Image (tube, rainbow, N blue to C red; front, side, top):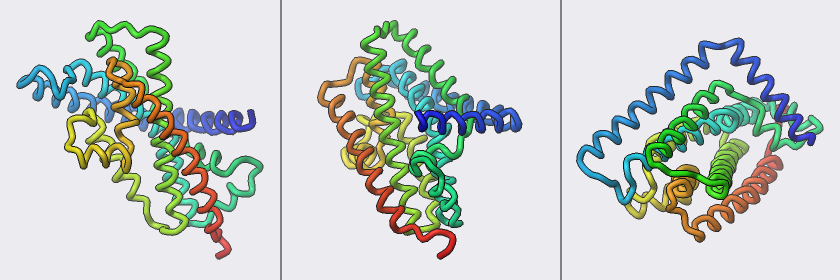
Length: 262
């Protein structure tokens, strides 16, 4: 209950910021519109030459693009800005203020910055997914919707834990802010396509080193009837493993934090 109150407080602050800086919200909306347009144009060019791409139809890939935009919005809403601020707090030694508060330090670090402007990506992503499903003529029942939601949450959790682990490296290597930029660029470019189109070495990289596959392709497979039981179980197991590993790594990082007094 206390954790929910903390999250709600930061969300309120985020809403106040977007009210104050409405132009930023409009810019975010324009940016996602441009990104969606370029993605759809890429699909139009490819499917002007073929009917399927490694077994994926155009409308199935449109659904995947929608999922990528949705996950990117969730990432940009809280995770990415909070991780950027965390690395800055570690660099400046201002993490001390967070550590003295009567709440879990990882939770505070994970929700300390909220970019409500990313709601635009979430809304656009959902709209694209619903449009693609309508074009496919796919009716998603309660079981299918629940499976999609579970895979989406699992994928977002894996991404969060991955970024938390990267940010925790700032306890040892202070100036690593660009690492989040590299991740975002990889996510934007590689995430708009199903993982199966890439060669084996790159597929392994985007599955285990940079978890784009679990964040985008797996939820898309659940919507298009491609998801296997093995992949479902592996995704859930990996999400739990990432949670445990990132929590452990966070605690190790805190033990190496010297603070502003160092």
